Image (cartoon, rainbow, N blue to C red; front, side, top):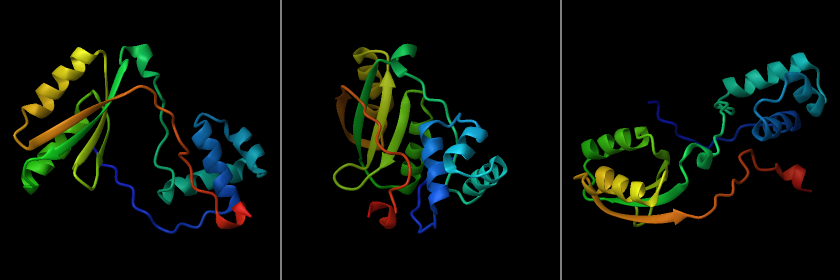
Amino acid sequence: MAQHSEHSSNVDLDEIDRIIIDELVANARISNATLAQRAGIAPSTALLRTRSLVERGILTGYHAEVALGTVGRTVQALISVKLRAHDREKIDTFVERIPSLPEVLSMFHVSGGTDYLLHIAVGSTDHLRDWVLDNLATDESVGHTETTLVFAHHRGNRGPLPSDDMLS
């Protein structure tokens, strides 16, 4: 599985780029004609601009989002993981194995007292308990875990921040 890492860089985005990004973040299935209309440009220009955003690594993919509860994944949790030792081989094995498990929605490498934060979704609290026992508690590289149940998830802004001139 390919590893995705976000690196910050100062990429110049003009107003048209920002409109295209905002529209695609809101609805990745928007037609090119509608996208062009909302950006105030020709459809051929919208297509070229969108391709440029992909080639520049600004748009990294398009996806479908599943309502997890409708497919039996009604329990979500955030699990803090502190590794026992910081051995590169064990870390690499952990980082390769955990995100590939079907229950894992996201894995974050974080600073502070925790090394990793996992976001998982399962069918029940019993499944959650068993998952932690089977995949973390029995892993020799894991020293400590702490599980927090998610009651609600509210998605934030997934597009770029407004530019300074857009704020005034």
